[in-house]
Length: 416
Image 1 (cartoon, rainbow, N blue to C red):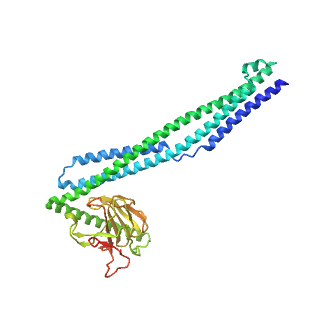
Image 2: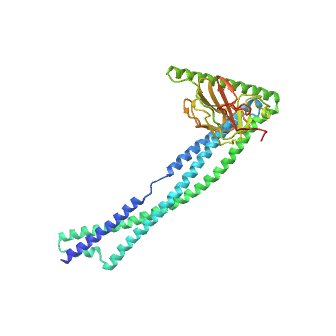
Image 3: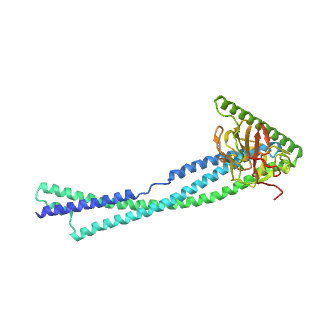
């Protein structure tokens, strides 16, 4: 009778410990946070950074091979524009890494606190088991077996002891696993913090490098004034390129209209007026005759230059339409042309980056790029052209004779 009671007590103790261990494991599974960021994400960004760094070295090698000859100025400017775009991409990559590190640090701190809480609970479970054994007196597993009255009783006792030993071992194993996890989390946390600080320092260095590159790129164009003859020759080539690109844009617009007509779509010019393509209202150059800016700009300006925009301002579609050009050229730099209907296009030039592709339909106000100073430019601004009925027009509304649907409320350079 007593043996049966002892067996039941051992069985209850074994099942109780197993159940307690299972509860701890279930709580651990339920409390585990959903991963918002992983070290794999960081490694992917590092691989991208390595690719960008290789591109940077390639561009620098090409720049080093060019002389300071004025005839190679535009080739040098184009490479510098590419270098600037590469550095901007590196900055974006580093900022993404910093964001990942910040997320990982927050996440790891939460996981560490959770693991420490689980460890404390598991340690209490271990101590409860030890206290229970002390209260019952030190009983040798072997002595329990030796008290068996028969072979069947021996097997029963053996099963009970194995169950108890397994439960005890699970408690100990889980405690050790939690302690190992805590050490790993602490190591990950320190690594994340160290790499985040290194990325922040790298970010500042890249931002400084970007400013230097922009100054160098703008200086290349300004240096063309050192030799008037060479300046005029380069200027003539750039103006010829602009005229050729504009003519090609009109051809593409006509082609698009013809395709729309063939498919039964309306080819009427998009009704309604224009909105400002950038938030600035400061005009540095208007359409038509002007003094050559710095001696390097066209004296017969084909568009409107909008200044005070910097290198990060969004460029908006002045009117809804279909993108027919999105590319880089020596004269316009990064530029986009949108067709709004028969004979009506808008052109946006010197952008640091383009956000749309050929064939894409854009609504009025959609972001199509970011302002910059690519191509034939000595500083950040947006060169904006409007063509109506196949002819370039002044998009500004004259204060004396306001034109409906055109840009108003602007300030001319020199008047403010």
